[in-house]
Image 1 (cartoon, rainbow, N blue to C red):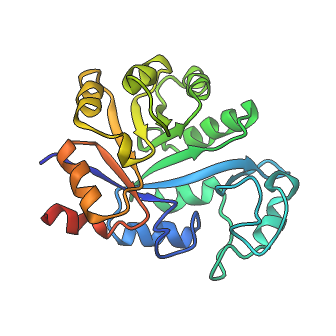
Image 2 (cartoon, rainbow, N blue to C red):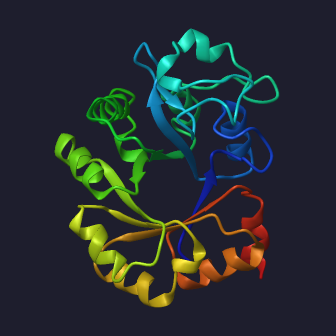
Length: 234
C-alpha cells in the first residue's frame, strides 16, 4: 500500500488550540507526516502570522485585525491554554526535519504577503518540504512565477467540472479537495493520470478516512491524526 500523508489540520486541533506551536508539536507526537497551518496576514511590523482569521477575535482573548498589531502586541495575547500566536518562522523551526508543511494562504491576497511567504520558505530551506495551498488560482500562478520549484495546491471547495483541469490551468502540483464529498474514483484517477497528487480535507470519521484511503488519495487532512491507524485497520 502506498504511503498516504497524514496531514494535521491547524496542528492537532482536535486536542490543542488551533494553529499554535502546542498543536503543531502534538500533531507530530501523534504521527502526522505533514502539518497544515493558516497564514492570513502580516503583523504591522512585517511578520507572517500563523492564524486562520484576519482578526484575533475568535481564537484569542484579544480583539482587532492582525495587520493593525505589532508582533509584540500579538504575542501578548492568549491563543488558548497560555499559547501564543506563532510566526511562520517559528512553525517552520518546530517542523523542520520532522514533518512536512502545508500552508493555507487565506484571503485577502497580497503581493507583499506572497513574496514574503516564498522568501521565508526559501530562507528556511523548506522548499522541498512545503506545499502552499490556495483557493485562488491566480495566487498560485504568481507564487510559481516567483519560484517555479515551489509546490502549490489548488483548494477546491465546491462542485467543479473537471477540477483536475482547473488545477493544471493554474500550474498546481496538487488538487486539494476541501471536503470528502468532492472526492470520487473518477476525480482521483483523472488527477493521477495528469500527474497531479490529490489531497482531501477534513473527513470527520474513521469511515470517511477509510473510504479516502481506498480511493487512493495522496494526503488526508484531519483535526485528529489518531483516526488514521483505526481507519487503516478497517
